[in-house]
Length: 449
Image (cartoon, rainbow, N blue to C red; front, side, top):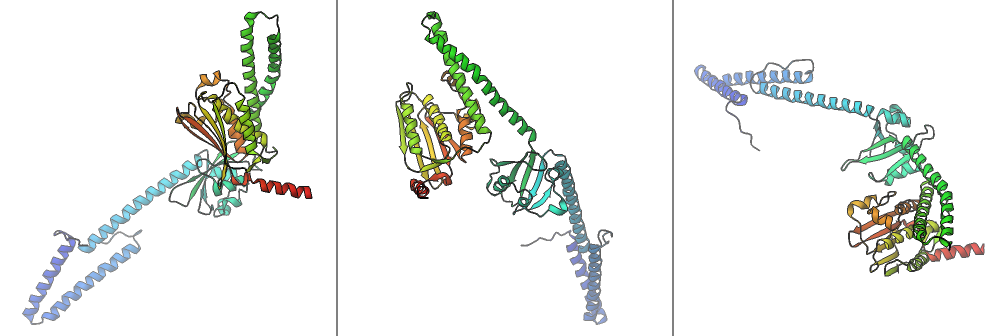
């Protein structure tokens, strides 16, 4: 690459002066008859001056913090000016970065959340005061230590290995502090470092517990008076002496009482699932048989689609709670039947692959708009409130499905096109899929023992 020399630059001026000095020395040499001697003397002086300037500049570079730049003209002066500008710019940027770091430290100290910077192997690189207080961290002792060695909660360790930054958050309760802490891992693309955000959610957990207790207690308290009301309504319906004008109101009251009873039962079921009680009995469940039974029950309904199909692509069993698995499919099937016209169809399917076991319920009903799908599993959420109430829906069915699937380490996938129908798929992990041969062999071993 060629760099053009400006005619007014210090380098060009220095070359000009050097050429004039050589020319003058040549003339003087011719006059005195010692051309080469005079040229050697001039060049020697020139070299000494350049070496002296180099020494001064080297000394200044070594001690530039305490010494001013030397007063040198020509190219060396230009070089000193460039170095001085670079040094001043470097100091300016360093001061900016230092100021930003100090401001960042002040902000992280004042922020209500804890922050921990982790390296590629989850070693602690830095943390703020809030995280230090909640997790009893000390800079001299814990920096460089892998965080799994300090927080040994199994769920937290599993989250660090496989958790998704957006979906995977872990609630951890330290034994000594009594706090519920929410851990969220933030990863950036192209960087091996990770930021762990820690938030105290003890208050939210207490409120959630109070809400669950209230719903459960209220549901239990409402069940008894509702049973009494339903009993009197049944008696009035069977009373032959009842004024005919009261027949229609009594039937409507019975229908509303049945709807209230269904809501209360759903609330109690949801409260049981949300309680986190993992003591449900798990055993191999005959999914093909369960789906066949649910299909026969659906076919006996007065109001149903013309076709309710069953597609069994596997004869394998599923490890889980039979009552909860039946509740999952029953809720999905009930919703599909409610929102599918008589001329439509509903299809249940069971299949297995290397990803695990899958149960799907597909309908050709009204479908769901895309903006509603993320909220379908919320309690009492309805896409069409008027239609849901008219059909007797409680708005709790998919919430029950979500929590029951969570207890089985499964997830719910929803695919829907408005006006064309919906497909609800339950994906179960591979370790819950069991072959019939394994079950029969286990039974024979137990019998033989």
